[in-house]
Length: 450
Image (cartoon, rainbow, N blue to C red):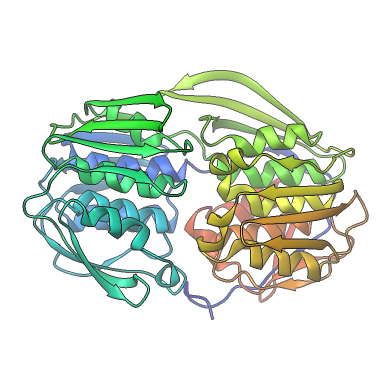
């Protein structure tokens, strides 16, 4: 049973060539942060291109509950009139973050150093995910957290009345943990320092600097050292949200594996901490070209042209690249099925604690579709069968995970037999226009009950 309402079984049939222009939604990571930092600024922040998926809308609702005025003007245009750093009011009701691990962890950080008490909840998937990775460092500020066994939602956070600055080394690469600590540091006196041994997506650092926070980044022998001076007055911004590279991954990968395809995906954010998938696809032999390279809002942007690539080869994906493409491994594993040889993905234990255990979910589905998969605690290997040789014909459990559902819909476009998922409704959390967009390109995706 879906946590998003009635389950929506979906089937993807082998399609003809995909062609056209795919306007994917705004970047989810930047959309979350735009709303949160807008709420922590003094004055009106203007946002265009906001992703209006369920995850981001839940963050918008939360910012309203904390006292910010958040207004939807239509067509992805939003304004946020913020309450300033330390100005969050105590919400009257429980904050429901739906399916969004990013949303709940960033919001916990943003409120952790204000003297308010907040209870968080989420859907069945989010409530199964560990929160201690965030609440443990937040406790260093003086924050208290009480949740279910294993540090799971529902959880009540008691913000620190007299927060202290912290120095924290992130134990595993996680932009969510890093960002939560930095957001908490905004309302702590003095300097909060975060050290990450491996760089993760840096949208929070870029945006904090854009909003006027005193933040510096230094590469040292210890790692990447981020220093934030607390209690600034953030200045409202005008933000143009680039298109989401994680969403772009699906039409791009579909075009690469579907014979005759030629798809243009414009205005994609190519922040180097997010673009690992595209580098990997090119190394595999994909016909993927970056056109019209430019910069918008401090972020590199380009138009991506993806064409059918008949000579894909399996490769060893460098473990150091994992942080820059962690959400894209499910759809990469689909592309790997159509390559010759083994695609080896190492250093990806973070996939075990996403919306689902993504390694387990993808391995089960790929095996059901006739593909050989080996896996371990932090690695997996897919043995490709080459184009035209992947059987398909399986029905896969999406396990309340939008990226699992979309990955298997992409797979079905190029398998010998259709691929199905038991529930496609979670797709709405991040890519509400996925089905219509892919159909417009030529995909044959059907709702089983329609």
